[in-house]
Length: 229
Ligand SMILES: *Cc1c(COP(=O)(O)O)cnc(C)c1O
Image (cartoon, rainbow, N blue to C red; front, side, top):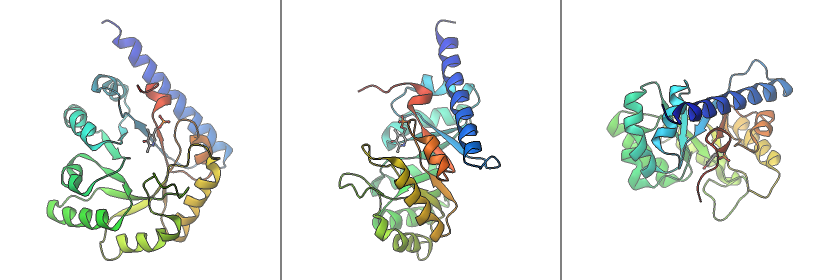
């Protein structure tokens, strides 16, 4: 059996621990009735390690690189047909065609060109994964996402003309800032646009995100351990 059972126990134990921290955060926020999704971020971790999470019963995962996901996930999805995959990293328009069959949710819709490309390819393929609009709440030059001041118009364009299935918003707060104000801003933009889902919160701040209304958290390190350099 080698070391596999130990690793599996690790990941299963980590998943349980994160799940119970999520329940505690929901209770603390007076949201005990809410059910929220745990997206296990498996980027950089090899398929064997991801398989351990799948074998422990977890079904929802996130990857940030299209190419890496394309190498890892078709076989895993064949083995575990219940598995669901979120794209949480940047999407180039020339990758849209290959992304639609593999991902169940695309969290990083952030510019008109990509939105148009997604709409066209969805019509062509007849496959319409749920989409989130990524908002650059910290207005960081190097970060993807629509600017907060342009979010309403972009959301309207996506839902109106392009008829994209936009379900919610996603953000990645700046690393050196208190995340709470970014979560609050994302929740405010979602509320005024009638969007119910909020993807926010990672290993170090998912409890705060839950306090501010997260409906899904994206947790990597706390489940799979540290990533390589
Ligand atoms: C890597 C990543 C995460 C997970 O980060 P951890 O700190 O390992 O939990 C969440 N969201 C996005 C967009 C990521 O790229």
